[in-house]
Image (cartoon, rainbow, N blue to C red; front, side):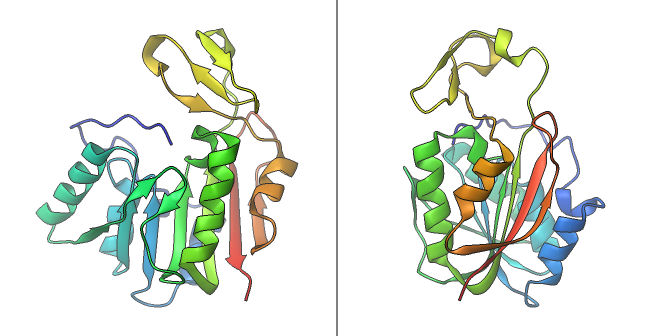
Length: 206
């Protein structure tokens, strides 16, 4: 997970303030006051939206500064966000301790190996019947022009410019399905082209 952090406020509304069907279904499947992990929380636009709805929210991000800013925003609103540690594929949370996990535009910004480890961890920390909501960024015109190298698994690592150090993997739809297979049942898959955002909603098998 490679994510930039900053002191400015979120410039976009939370995904839970829009009209995406998968997001509405994700919320509908959660128990009242359920426990959710926002993995790759950034500055907390989604975590805060969930906390305002009464859910118990934990946050994790490779950037400790992002988590600090996220929790600070929550505190100023009288909300509380628990911090979960994350280190190379391992999430600091108890087994089956969450009702839902959100990973919005995160898995495609890590290597394939790390992504597989993380999805396995999602299954470990989510109770049977719990839900997972993930999004994957689409391919942008001209993004291959920026200085980069291609890692052995096909992941791009930018080597210069404003994206220096960032990882990006543009998944095929079949690869996304394979990524979550096994412990997860796919309930909804929105988006079909590599140039558009893909959203997948899954339920933890019992």
